[in-house]
Image (cartoon, helix red, strand yellow):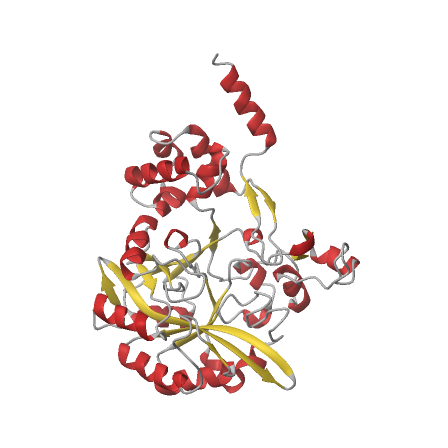
Length: 412
């Protein structure tokens, strides 16, 4: 069975997360997007765990169900700890096949920190120790290092991470077989490190609000069961793990280097030129994903890994609509057009991935259809994100706008 999965989200009990991130809203938006399998997020939080037990039907195969949407039990843990004189901040996604294992994990982690303070708890637990705790409880759990290039909280983060996965997980490293690329990197960037060749590269939304579910996701073609998905990732099986759906990584908020307070965005080459300092204020810049990849890679830019799971870069439909109309994404007209498009074609991913130009043109404005086609071909103008600021993508440039204005004037 072919299906789309988004395994990393957060509940309403996580900081800076929408109150609508509950089971009902997650399920509703998964349907709108065209997603079959969702991660629950935040199973370490006692109140969220109660809601999951109340609202999810146990299917007996490691997955759960609510309103025709499947769920996998997941949580993200933030580990902040010192090792050999350096402080590390690592985020790891944990998956579990049962509430029984979740309860044991929560009991063990609860002895090491306050799990009720945040849906994504902050614990002073070494990543290697975390993996040992989880795998000792249930060897079929998965530990997936989250958004592995984010500067401040990740496996390879420039400000808080390691240079090698073996230094992070030590003897538990062989049990790690999947890595999450994060919004600011795509698989091609990760292919530049030969040390990552054995890992499955997954992509998830890390969503804090329902509308952002599926902004990154995975396409599988396997049995809808926990073990089937786990084995697919462990084997890196291209016949069952078909592709990932990615942000354009430049849109991620840590793609380039920079200093947000000064409005300074720097490419890796520019950062070297300024010796890592902001050219305006002289303070150190936040080193982003591209520079970190350049630092650790042993392959050139553009390298294609033979046998790798492919990927597709997408722009969320509401962003395409907004750009086609020349208005802000959150405007009422964008919401109206988005709802209308979903009503006509069923799901967002159906529109972005599958529908032909001819079919879209029957129901959607010509400019929106053109925007979708340009996205599929990668014909975009992008200003890369930096130091916590999302990048911006323009599908229609100033010349397009002038031509549109001329066409409108010619009607009068």
